[in-house]
Length: 514
Image (cartoon, rainbow, N blue to C red):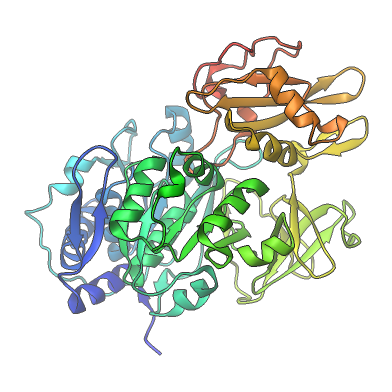
């Protein structure tokens, strides 16, 4: 078996054997495409490594990459690994307050960013500096294994910054990721579309895993559903990751039924619950074996997997444990019966070593026998298939009856006028809470609150039907498509009143209620 090498070293080895093949095509929504061959990607990341090292990057240090999608994001990340540093991708759009909190937590030696403010004691390098490195040596560098090599950011359930560090060596052994990823339709030498934000764990990791398996990456500067379809057709994309919100925007495009998706071997999705209608639509479009879902956490304490074919026999499930054992526990730590909702605890079977370390938070809840929870709720059926409920803080209690927002959101998302939707609980004098829907309308489509409520009433039991609908131009989702419910709960509770949420919690202006 081939020797495991650092991610940066792996790029060099591929460049030696396939210097002229395309490694990365950057295809912005507006503008011409540009191509990096393997030789160019290796040479430019060598220069980036030397630039970063001249500013202190090396083993035991952290390089924050807060760039928007583009070639520079890859050059800095690979260059940092070639220097032996750990890479932490962060959102370019963080507020100054959020930036300061992460910098105080991580203490990076270098921040690669175009939009961030500077900070004392930290070197800031923008895209112009990172790409104007022609004067630096492009020759090879000594092999090195970053340890640790990667971290990911999270707001955490408290809203305070949290960083999840992968403490394991950041190495790749050819074929190793394919072995893990083959059930996901991930194989050597594919063309992979990278349409998600590289500040999120899934697009970042699967893009770099792909490079290590000689993928040709087709990278967009931002997600645009029509542009993504064009890229799939033009470049004959075989593997792509999409969050459900991205899947929905593509599936609701006019004329999507005429797009040529015959090259797609796998649509891989994770990051958020997928509405059943949307899952069925993609299965019908691609075939059941080409739609694969995975559920897990950035902490890598375990995961599940389900194919489209399995899902059709168990709608709503996220699959069975993949090298993972699962327990569902109640508040006292006791196992709950099959079919009953509780807190999801997982234990990965492939390693006995820690798979995460937190910066800025206490360790996740772990049982004495090694099962860990990151706060998700769900239930198991008799065959061990997992079904998700909402996290405890998101559940809505209607007079003692638990309503799960995801169920109501799935129904509302079926309505052709709904472009995006989130459901929250508001205080209610009689029942404790009531269901409230926040809706972004689809482009060029109109619908009123009464129409949407009637739509739900035909499909949901009475306690689950929203008693109010609020319209917004945009919902507070992060770049990975995950909903930030903290920015949704209105301060004004009167039926039909316009929300007065503090502006720092709302992304985009509010529309008048219809």
